[in-house]
Image 1 (cartoon, rainbow, N blue to C red):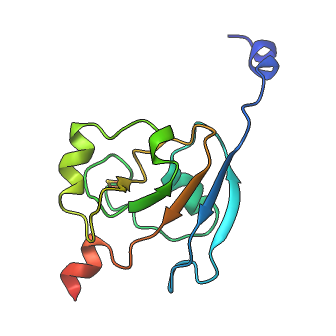
Image 2 (cartoon, rainbow, N blue to C red; image 1 turned 180 degrees about the vertical axis):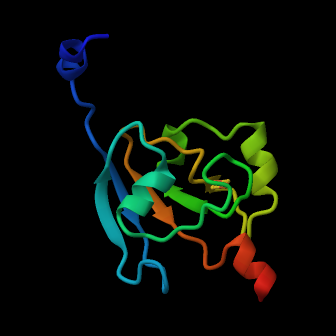
Image 3 (cartoon, rainbow, N blue to C red; image 1 turned 90 degrees about the horizontal axis):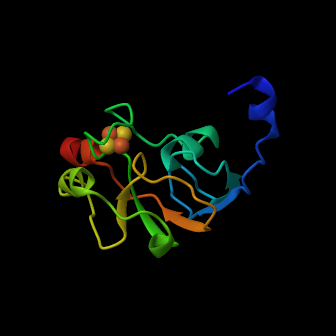
Length: 124
Ligand code: FES
């Protein structure tokens, strides 16, 4: 692909993301527009939310666990690897996902950060 073709590509509409308040990581909550196609974990980090990502975002640690409170049906479902890792996540529920496995696809998401991560739960 030439440089000209690359720049001719239409930009995808951004993905609206709302993060519910979390006492440590995001006390006031946050709403932003993420880049469609980006991993949710990268979008959160870019906004200054210090979500853990111990395995460097390759679906091997479960520290990037989040709850997708709205928009879950609009994103790709978890694959077997993600489901296996999620079994180790703190506070697992039916809306749990690993944020390194969720790609923003234009559908609005509401995200809740778990009170603890796998690592914190071990320390406590
Ligand atoms: S960063 Fe390790 S599973 Fe997402």
